[in-house]
Image (cartoon, one colour):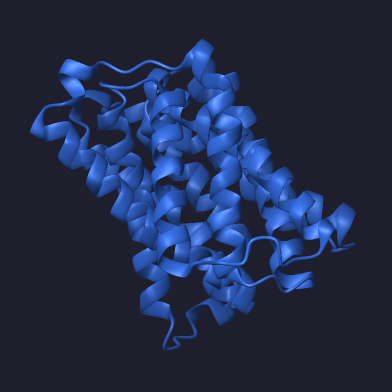
Length: 279
């Protein structure tokens, strides 16, 4: 339980830092993403001697090799689309991803992970996800642009990757899987875009390391949550992440916190408490 909660904090911190780097400093996405994934791999590598483990006989089967390749392709695609969304300032479309990813992930886990099916967790997860949608829904979310289909595709891929990761955790520890994921993605991004990594302000370089630290906190603990709690229950904890972003934004960017955000946060916390102690 604590892993999933800390993962939501890592998510919130990472989003705020990414927004500063990509929006305020206008660092090109094709320079930011490769550097970010290099640091994600480096920081995760520090954890490998203690937490790294791989079941080679199992992983070397066609099933797990195929799942790993599918995970990499899926992650490369949705990460590229996600960070472009942050930089381009398509706020209503980016919020669309944030709002619908949890509920989509919970539904997909119900369909593709029969071993995790639990009616109490499913209902609580749907309530928490619906509270998120209700708190942030605005009329402009109904506006359709030429990028909407791309953003929806990114959201679906992000949710689908969670299912793939859960299956791969049978063959790898969370730290090993995340290291392999980020290292391969860093190499692919470097080959694809050949970025000038050092051609950026020193502050951006430092912010990228901070963002990577939040990213490792979020994703490694998220993977541990998948392994211990399951995808649906972990995702429900991660619904707290967007609310933490709003509260951080209120403090850092001086944005107003609305009553509906407070009410929705209470609903999400109540759903988490119910699943944690009364399911």
